[in-house]
Length: 604
Ligand SMILES: Nc1ncnc2c1ncn2[C@@H]1O[C@H](COP(=O)(O)OP(=O)(O)OP(=O)(O)O)[C@@H](O)[C@H]1O
Image (tube, rainbow, N blue to C red; front, side, top):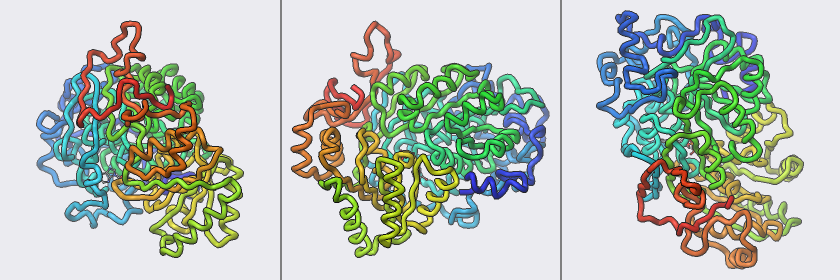
């Protein structure tokens, strides 16, 4: 992980961070709208062709969200011809700035197998697109822009398009097909799509493309200020997820001139401050560290034009909500309508949707796949295991895996437990029983956490014991098996945990150990498995029948197959004459398969 704490430390003597030694000091940072000068253009023509106004932006003060980039109407067409240089022809020729001479920008693809030379004809990187063929899609809201079928239909800009090819993304996943045109039309968005379906790119592409297109068109930050003025903010709930998003975003932004910086807790703040001083267009952060930076007056949010919350339902639940409100509503961030806001998750309980609406304006709600559902690509098994038998049962599973030859680098096993102590003790027990394991949880230092994750990813320790800190968002190739040694209390947490396997169209296996302690989960678990066409054991159905509907209730009884939908469609949330729908329309991409209006979510 080139951008991790430990890597930062390794780079510290040479200045720290990405390409540190070759970059000018912070005073030479130039915002994107000035960096993107065609070589022959004078100042006047630059502002005419690259300002927000050039694309009919209605939010002049801040440049506003990007306006439609669908090919044939976008301003990219001019510069897509002529130059064969990577990075978008004339756009690549910088007169000054941190990225002067883009060849000095550290290549984020260098650790990947697919390098520049490897580009060749695009090929499917292993995504099983057939798995998404019949996926139900539902949009609601006013004038929802239509989806696209290919990346080529969207005018993302040459440099970004090249990076998409470098990533071997041949065509957009369903969530990308829908969200990219919506976001590029400048609309706020609440998007729900299954785990591993490509949501990171879905919010990164429009942000990067919008910044390339518009740069700054609002007030300029003072030149000598030590304060950073990012244009986009991506918030995520865990440090590891922020690191991952940063790595992905750096690939997508490679040689676009858009600079991505990450800030997260548990790592030395000085290194992050130094990175910020060099300039930042997109800041990826965890809320706690961002609040720290805001309090130190080292980051200002007044230039923010794009706000993305990944794992948005987690970000707005009780743990994070006060911090998020502080960041979004009580600092200097522009309000909804001036900034563009995008919320993404695989799960969106109604109560959280209601809260989230405070941050959005006239937004489009999108559900790709069933809201809060798991993907059919994951084979789910539930086994009845007494508390005292869990270890020996796990051992049996691991021995069976080993007998099948499934214990190599290509078949990693992620084991979720309830407590940090439990994680340490299970890790130790596995190791002394001949199964190399490591553990990740909140009591470990950030260095230990990153080391554990790396050791797991590389297959050095093919078993990772984790608490919920690893439940969301982490995209680890080759996780073949997720074991819920201890089941979570909330079905949405279960959905995210098992979503660490069966990603990007690949199949996976999830095994859960269930006993009386998990009774409250029986009903939602049985419903979820049924939705995903999984075999529900008879004993689990009996547990489900016995357990009263509680906090975890998902469906509205038989026939209500979905765990959630746009809450604006539910009249009970729409009392008092407020038209939360904004006169919007409901578009269903499939045969109205939602349950009755009584369909409820875990938070009803
Ligand atoms: N268009 C595409 N073609 C091929 N692979 C893709 C495409 N889009 C994304 N991917 C790959 O799919 C994997 C999953 O993507 P990502 O991590 O963004 O999923 P996600 O929807 O955010 O999952 P989660 O809900 O768990 O956070 C990643 O390895 C990513 O590189």
